[in-house]
Amino acid sequence: SSNKQVKITPAASNEHNTMKKSEWLILIGLLMLSFTPSIGGVFRLLELGLGITLEFMPKNPRVQSFPVPVEFHLISSIPYCIIGAFQFLPSIRRNHLKWHRLAGKFLVCTGLVSALSGLWMTHYYFFPESIQGELLYFVRIIVGVSMIGSILLGLSFVLKKKIAQHKAWMIRAYALGQGAGTQAIIGISWLLIVGEESTGVTRDILMTTSWLINVIIAEWSIYKLTPRSSSSFKRDYLR
Image (cartoon, rainbow, N blue to C red; front, side, top):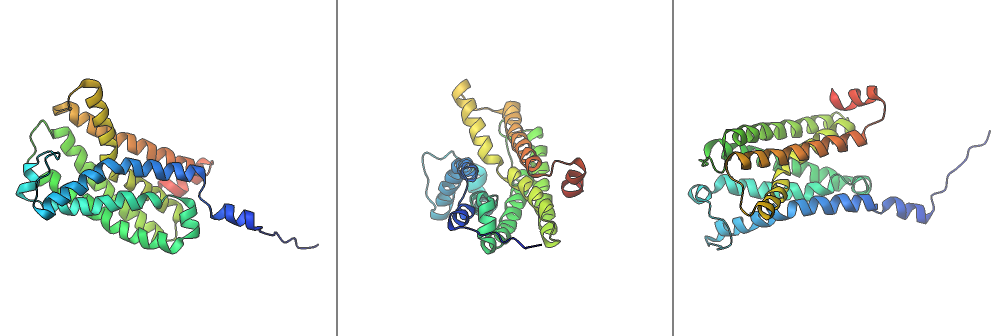
């Protein structure tokens, strides 16, 4: 019997190294999702760092009284959402593995700081009922703890070379971390339809719905990445 050798042509090599259309759509979608909260965060950091007042920014007495947690939250959340978008592109992982690993270490740190600072603000800042009721308080606590748990699980699985589980838990962590992007879309949509910003229980429900949407999309994405056999799915993703 003869051994057959497969030649890789330059065209095939270029196709292997080029981002697919689906990857571009994922990247653009995630960057657009990050755009509004990131821009708002940059302006808030400028206010706090330069000691200036930007008239178009909403007033926030909690930030002015004790800005450190907000600064930690913004400085960590913005790169987590933007750089994190590139981590889910197969061509980036395949062709730039060193970058993927280096960025991953950075994102573990920023993700944990983002979640921890978010938990601190949720518990210790005073929020009027119109901005945060009991429902939103408990949801934010659950989201923060779940995000920390997902990141740590994702880290533990990659250290064990269990890449499938690593991907799944990092997708879940990123979906929770992107809550502000979906909340901006839903909040703006509500404002355009109703004519005024949501407050009270309505705001709590809309904010919670945003995270639920992200979680559903994350679980659907994980399902699409899984082998079709149910036994493989349970073995690789649920244990």
